[in-house]
Structures are given as C-alpha cells and as structure tokens.
Length: 406
Image 1 (tube, rainbow, N blue to C red):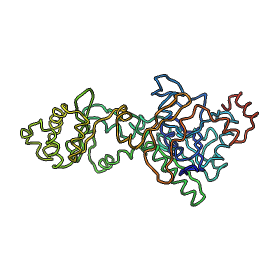
Image 2 (cartoon, one colour; image 1 turned 45 degrees about the vertical axis):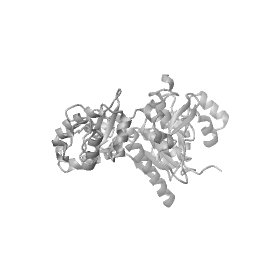
Image 3 (cartoon, rainbow, N blue to C red; image 1 turned 90 degrees about the vertical axis):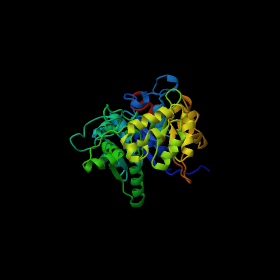
Image 4 (cartoon, rainbow, N blue to C red; image 1 turned 30 degrees about the vertical axis):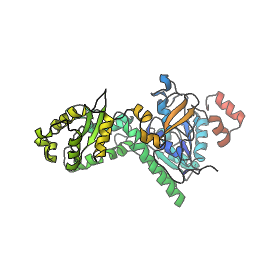
C-alpha cells in the first residue's frame, strides 16, 4: 500500500515561472499535490535556459536549475492568448484547489484568468499571486527578479563591508528562501481554513515585503534611530567571528567565539601564536575594539591548518567552527549529508541520472518524496487535456496542430 502523503488529493494550477513561484509549488508537489505547471512554447520559462546545464550542454531540457525547482510536477503547454487555450486554463482551475502565479499585477486579469474569473468557476479556490512590489502603491508596476528584490528590500545594502560596494548574497536569495516559503505557508494556512469553513482565499504576497523579513533586526535597529551599515563578517555578540584562511587553495574555516571560555579554547588550539604579546585580546571589549588586528592574527595562525582538522579541533572544545565547503565537498565528502541520504538520484528523460537534494525536513507519518524528475516541456499536455479536462483525442489533435496546446 503506498505511503500516504500530506497533500494527497490536492491539485495546483501552477502558472508561475522562473524561481520564486516554482519553488513555492515544489514542496506541495513533493508532498503529494498534483501540480500542473502551465507553460508556453512561444515564451518558454526563462529558468529552462539558465545554467548550470547537464554536461555543460545548453538546452531547455538540460537546466539543473529548472530541474531542481520542478520535481514531482506535470507540465502542459497552452496558448493563453487564444480563447480556446484560456478556456482550457479555466477548466484546469475549475478542477484545482490552488492557483498560483508570480506575474506582474494585472497580467492574469488581462488573460481572463484573474481571481474573479477563477472564483466564478471554482468558488472555494485558494488563489495566490506574488507581485514584486504588491498590487497597490506607486511602484506596483515595477518589474524585476530576485536580485532586484534583494536590492529594493535592503538585503544587498547590508552585504559586504562599509567601505566597499555591496557584494550581494551570491544568489537570488529572495527567490530561494523568504518569498516561496512564506507563500507555501500561506497556501497551507488557506487550505486549512477551507477545510474548516469551506471558504476559499485570495492571497497577495508582495515579494518586497516578504524579503524585508530577512533583515528584521536591521529594520528594528533603524526604527530606533540606529545607523545600520554593512559589517562584513562581524557579529554584535560573537568576537572573533569570521572566516579564516587555511592551508591549500581557497580553503577557509568559519569560527564564532561567544564567551571567554571559548576564546581560551581557541587560543589553545591556535597555540602557534604567542598570545601573551596581545593583552588587548584578553577581554571581549578589547577584542571588539581591535577586530581587524584580531582577525589578522588568527589568519596568520589558521593558514597553517587543514580546514577540516581546525574545525574538528575547535568544535571538540566547544567552539562553533566549520570548514567552508564547496558544492563538490557537499556532494562527495560531507559525511552528515551522506548519512541522512540527503542526495537523491532521479533518472531524467534527457539528462539521465541526476542528483537532487532531498526534502530537508522529515514528516513521520506522511514523509513525502521526490516522486519524479522535472517534466519535459509540455510532456503531460495530452494526458491532462484528455483525461482531466475532457477533450477528445480528435479535438486535442486539432488544437495541437493549431498551436493551442502541445
């Protein structure tokens, strides 16, 4: 008997694309929801053309980025600008519990697929939109992606060092963490409400406002009149708190010391330094005032160490430390991830056996799983149109020839 999943019986009409929207619907799909991703052959989802590509060969079916975001889903292609394509989309909405899009405000309304249109065919629908700035206000029509949202939401302004340009987060953080996961929680809350009351819900998640949650302490400090600036790796509590060079090419170890006992342990491990020459480091206040000298001194000692060994020696003495791992390290060397079977191999129709990261949380009764690899563009159009939306094979083939479906 199949293991039950938390969202068995839930269907999602997924009109979202690029990063944030698909990452919202991914956990729903991995926990049993039938997520039908609505795509277009005329305007292919940009994430399908984003690196990294399997074996370095570009192609809409070879993007690891797309594959990671779209496990356990089905893909259909509709021409939403054709009235017949719109009608099929409405049939899909009628057969769905949840509708998701992350287009600019008004896009779905202009297509005849807005909330009012959806509610007309499915009164108890849970309908979520993810506009960048929200549906109201002077900037409602601004367009952008994760990098734009990170800049507008203050995240980039806190990255890097005060005397240098912002360095960013190395990825479009709003697309990966705050926005899709806030949205997923909102959808689950609305489904719970519907189960109790029978009522649907309209959810507007302004990605700008969601991203601001990631810098909550800075916002609180600014609200109390403090000047908030980038601080590099410095921490208001821990000192030293930084990433220090180790032996080898581009190898580093992150260290965070929170009290005098941990500082004593750190000095014991880094005994190559004659710490008696640095009485200014004996107190927390002294270390805080001399951060630059402290970091430089630790770096001169840590460069002699293998990063893994240094982290092991420090953590054994109660000091928070970790080697800075590359992606290769995580996949091939990390014993913790291996022990938890974090990496899953799925056999993609084009890319072949490919590595995916497993669901990072465990539900005891309804654990969920990556059921299928990401779908090929339009792979499930015929099945969805004929088995779910009621088209005959003949009608489907006519619409396919005319580019309405495919």
